[in-house]
Length: 404
Image (tube, rainbow, N blue to C red):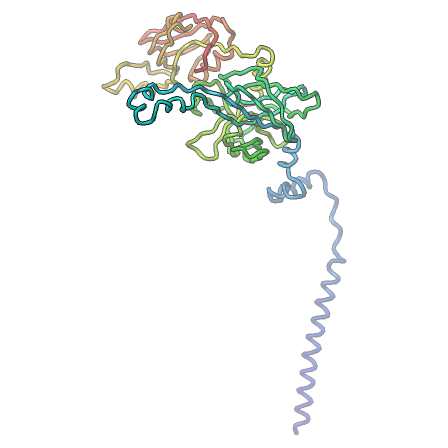
């Protein structure tokens, strides 16, 4: 009786094993057959390729044996220089050290031991403009220096001669005699720069030679007044690429390795914000410095403030305000420099400048740029509002003698 049952159990078990084996065979066969049955993909067009690239991670193009930053730095790196300066200053010994009281306690020779001279050392960056050895840097890097030493990336050092300084734009040109085979930095155009473009700063921050930092262009045409440098006449490129002391005068590059600016300003009260002089402005200034050794800047001689109706109304509703201001858009004259073109033309404190040569003026930066672009000795027709009346005044520009 047990054998028939056992036979049936064996037959059932064999059926299950056969089914499992058959499933495995079919699965393996499917895996082997499916790839062979796949048809080849149709050839890609240029448009299809761009779609595939667009779906890739933004970091993908930068991953590989070299990145675009490496290529950009290699293109300009050997033209970036380090600039070391030395300056000797004389200190006047405090007369109190000659007092008998001090002599009694410190001796008669104490005042002679006090150093009357001190040597100050500075560090900055720059880059070579042409093969003859012209180097562009910041004015504050080499200003009043007794000795300028230019060090190339390959280790060669040369004594530099300052050919010209312009404090108003913080630019200077230095000449070195190193033959005619020097590497030259490729110059781009700052007019083509857009917010969000790559920004690569190269220089010698804090004495660390040949340092590269990467960021983007944060904004354009940031005025020197907004930056907090009221004695300059510049619209800066703002970047978040790290700029530190020692970077001054070094190049700011775009993604192609072209110079788009000269790193110059650091905000001590902000992290990750730096400013660069646009290269198109620097080109024009460098050419004048090379030719004349200086740059003549026209000026009017007023301290000014951008005025809006809202600001004027806020002032006028203050019972303690010493003056009532016209509630208009224009430039409020806070002070007139004595013996200046503005003073000679009759401009007064409290006037509001509305127009220059028929063009509406709505900000202090606009007026400053208008004057900067004028010629020395040019007569400007300035329309001002004084109280409830308007007047037309003729102002002849003169040369700004001192940036400070």
